[in-house]
Length: 278
Image (tube, rainbow, N blue to C red; front, side, top):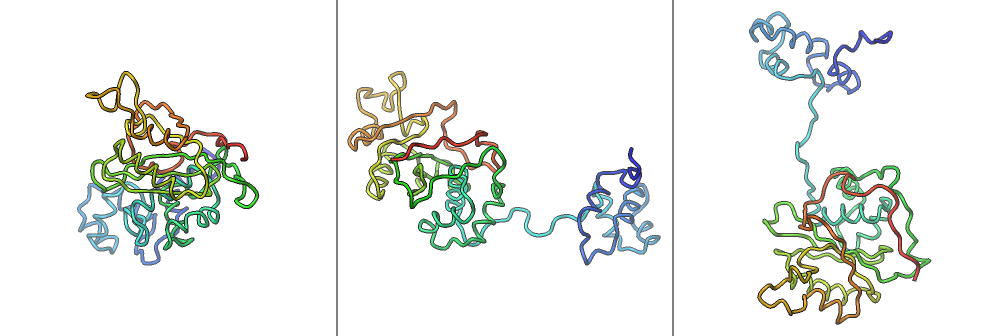
């Protein structure tokens, strides 16, 4: 124990000193610690000797720390953005790893009511407001390059959107184009329709689509998408072939759509692979 180690015998005391005390608080960390040390004593007797309300005494006897509890809602939600829009923001941030102003510039056409402060609060709620070391890479600017036609297609489960509701997102390699759609159920026909709509709205010609091995995007000979008619071509693969788009399938052990995770744990460390200039 160091020279001043005796001053902070408990972690709760250190937290209480580090965090600013609430201006309306009637007790100090030292008094709260004394209350917690009198757990065997009746609340009314402790309140009498310390000159406090019995409810205040009971509250601090229940707690394990002497620090003030955080104020505000326990589960904060946005009053401006919908659940699907928040998922889009987080997916876009993790995929591109662009700065706040760059994210706002590219997402504003998709979300007209998005403001810089609302974007920052959303990123902070999901723990992606700061990009940790090893995951930063500046992308080419929109003015000095052309898009190569590479699209990453991803399906993310929506919170409180039903058991099978999910958000389909398509983000180009150089972030010139973003397209999203909410579907009640992810199946091959919905995926093929999403691809056709994306092709019609894209300002460039699509050449390559990357996605996972979910049954809505791909199938195998061992596990055809329609077991009754295994010779039928998968709708998503058929749509890619008709539009002369290459399909790159990333194998995954569990390709089912999952809710967007908080933080960067689901993003592999290191720089993101960037395609060549067109």
